[in-house]
Length: 116
Image (cartoon, rainbow, N blue to C red; front, side):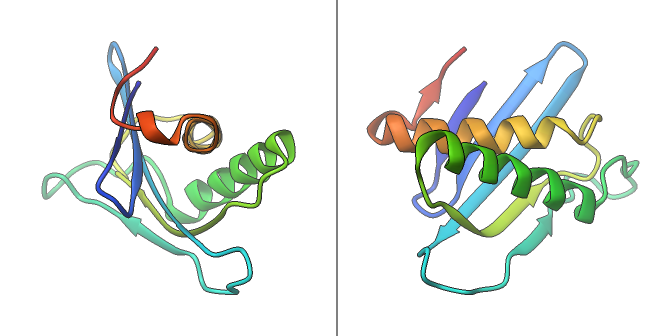
């Protein structure tokens, strides 16, 4: 997996043979009751849509909830980015969300680069 950040959005890219997934998350302050925007990113016109925004959102929210419980943290997403033509199953986004938070929480200074 490759972890990146542009200063606002924390990203993970996972490529395993023929499968590929991208997830980007931006966070808000815990006391903020904002709306979570889900932003499908189209890479090429005419791509086959394999992932639905509502399903990705559900999986990401579950992953964040699990990571918060495991770490005693309080991360709240503001933006969720994904590529609708990426590989299924959609459940992979639960794991990707957890990995972003685990890494951000335990190693914030090392969010650049490639790890396992």
